[in-house]
Length: 560
Ligand SMILES: Cc1cc2nc3c(=O)[nH]c(=O)nc-3n(C[C@H](O)[C@H](O)[C@H](O)COP(=O)(O)OP(=O)(O)OC[C@H]3O[C@@H](n4cnc5c(N)ncnc54)[C@H](O)[C@@H]3O)c2cc1C
Ligand code: SF4
Image (cartoon, rainbow, N blue to C red; front, side, top):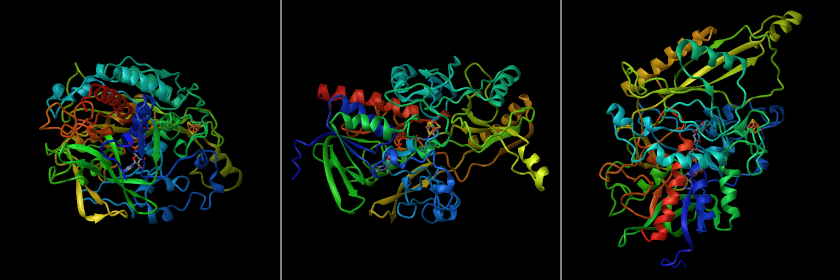
C-alpha cells in the first residue's frame, strides 16, 4: 500500500528520449530518487544492425507493403525492416485528423531513447532572433528567456553529446562547443565557396551529434552510414546509451518499461500532482506511482495528450489549462521546398564500400535577419539541410561491356531541402478525440494542422532560392521543387503547452513548470513559444537541464 504522505520517489519522469534522458540523469546524479517511466521496451546494443547487409534480412528490406500493414504512417520515414519494432503499431496507437488536414505523425518510437534512436542528429542553437522574434517582427509572443540564459547550458549539453561542427561567427546561429569537423566533400566545398562568393550566403557542415573524438567511452564515428539502425560504438547521440545509463548507474533511478502513462494524479485539496496512472503494456493492468514532482517528457503531442486526458472537476479543459491555450499553437517545420543539381566535372569513381559520411551540410537562415530588408511576403525564415552523393549510373541501359561502361560513369550530385519556421497559430492544435481509444483504452489525439499564407510563400521561396544557389555553384541539370506541405510531416513538432510570463496566455513558465500546479513540469518541446527553423532537439535538451537545476533549487528552498 502506497504511503501518499511519503512517496517512494522524489520525481517521476515520463519518457526516456532526448528530454527524459537528461532529466533523469541530471536529477539522479544530484541524489534525487527518480522513477523513469517509458511506454516502450528496453533498448540494447544487440538490436543494432548498422553493419548488417540487406541480404541477411528475411525480406531483404524490400517488403514495405508488409510494414504498411501495421505501420502505415511510421513506415514512410526512417522505419524499415531493420528497426520497425522500435516504432509504434499505428493500428494499436492511432490518432485522428480532419479529412482536409492530413498530418503524418511519424517517428513515434516506443523504446528507451525514443526518437533519439533514429534522429537525423542535426544540432543547432537558437539565438535571440528566435527567442525575441515577436519583438523583431511583431508576430506572436516572445519567449520568456534570452540566449544568455541558455548559453552555459548549451555548452554543457554539447560537450556531453559531442557535436561535430564548424564555427562561422553568425549572430543568428551561435557557434558552440564543437568537436573537430568532419570534412566536406568536393561538391559541398564548391557549394560552400561559390555560395559565399556569389551570394554572400554561408554553407557549413551540418552541426551534428556524431563524434569525431571519443567522449565518456564512446568511440568516434567510423563512417558506416545508417545511424538510424543503431550504433555499436555509440558514436552518435542516443539517450538509450548515454543519459539513461548514466542515470541508472547512480543507483538513484529506476526505469519502468512498458509503462504507458494515462494521466497525472492530483490531490485536489492541495492542488498538487501526486503521481501518475499508467497502463502496463503487457498485462494491460493499470497502476499508480507516486512522487513529490511529476515531469512529462513524452514528446510534444504525447505530453499534452497526458495533460488533456488528466481533466478533472477542477481542470475541466485539461490539467494546468486555466489559460485555455493547452493543445494550441502546435507547430512543425515545413520542408517541402528545395532542389538538386549535378556536378559532372568530378572524376572520382563511385564505390559500394563507403566510407559513408553520416553528416551533410547546412545553410543557415538568410531571410529576415536583423539589419536586412524584410522578405516581401513572409515572416521568419528557413535553413537548408543538404548532402552530396557520388553514385553509379543506375539508369544505364544496354548490355555487356557497353552497359558496364555506362554503369560506371559517376553521377555526382548535391541536394538541399528547406526546413522552415511555421508561425504559431491558435487554430493549429491538438485535442482529445473521445470517440477513439488506443489498445490501452486511453483516448487518442485529434490533430488540426494547416498551412497559412506565410508558410505557402516561404515554401515557394525555398524552391526558388535553392535553384539560385545551385546555379551559383555551377551545378548542371538543376531541379527545384516547392510543393504545398500537406500532408504535414516534419518530426520537429513543438508548442501545445507554450511557455510565457503571463499565466493567462501560457501554460508553462520559463522553467517549464506549469503555472497552475507548482510540482508539475513539461520538459519537452511542448513549451516552445515558437518553432525557429533550426532543428529543435539541442534546445529541448538544454532547456530541460536548466529547468532541472531550477527544480532542484526550488526543492531545496521549499518552494515546491
Ligand atoms: C527520423 C527523425 C529525424 C529527426 N532528425 C532530427 C534532427 O536532425 N535534429 C533535431 O534536432 N531533431 C530531429 N528529430 C526530432 C528529435 O528526435 C526530437 O525532437 C526529440 O527526440 C524529442 O525529444 P523528446 O524527449 O520530446 O521525445 P522522444 O525523444 O521521442 O522521447 C519520448 C519518449 O516518451 C515515451 N512516451 C511517449 N508517450 C508516453 C506515455 N504516455 N507514457 C510513457 N512514455 C511515453 C516514448 O516511448 C519515447 O521513448 C528527428 C526525429 C525523427 C523521428
Ligand atoms: S555512421 Fe558513425 S555514428 Fe552512424 S552508425 Fe556508423 S559509426 Fe555510428
